[in-house]
Length: 283
Image 1 (tube, rainbow, N blue to C red):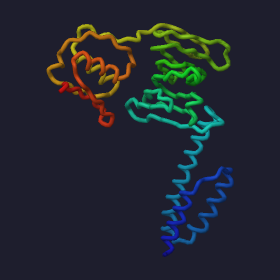
Image 2: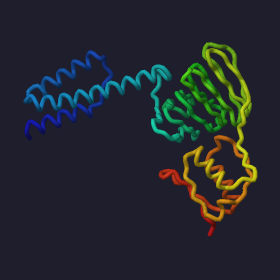
Image 3: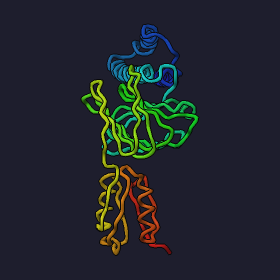
Image 4: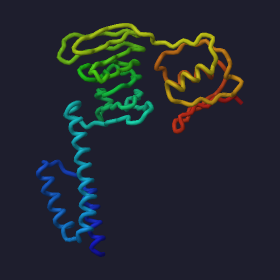
């Protein structure tokens, strides 16, 4: 085995090794030892190539660890966590371990503990819609900035704005909202929303339903496409059919599709990979 092969093997072993918890000074010392043994005996161009490559990776690893560490220390200092980020341009659907579902909007992040079934606590940065599975023994709570929203099983949305304000809308069930450092609690009924901004809380009403009054099915399909980013395929003869329907805003696409299928005696499939909903006639 030649020297280059030995170097590659040593570097690969170093990279895949389980990293122990240690101080920054110790990590730097260990890296210096590795570099002095394996890098400084190479010729200049070879040394520069691998030093630059390894140093870049090392910086990225440390940056990632720091990011996870600080996230844990702020939200759940004594627990292992799972972090879900949406860096794309479309809504990301997340299924939590308790079967609750989350629609995570672009530029948003969700953090929750690995023992989630027993400790249903979530931290949100950004915007999300929650459809929470009922569990009377384990309340579900979402922390966003200074607000803490607690539910047993319900549907609601939370949006954090750049101005450090938080908007909470309740669609189904009931929720309780608290502000860190404040002894008061606010209870919401469906159709109510809370705005928290600069230590002030405002409760107001909002329209939680979307009505289609004798409109074409084409209009409903367009709404589904805009709200959920699904492309709808349906037999041409149904496109201009009239429909009167009331649906809950933030309703799950599958629920809306079931209603359409029942009205027109159709079947449908949802292809998540291509973001398509295909309706077809029953055989």
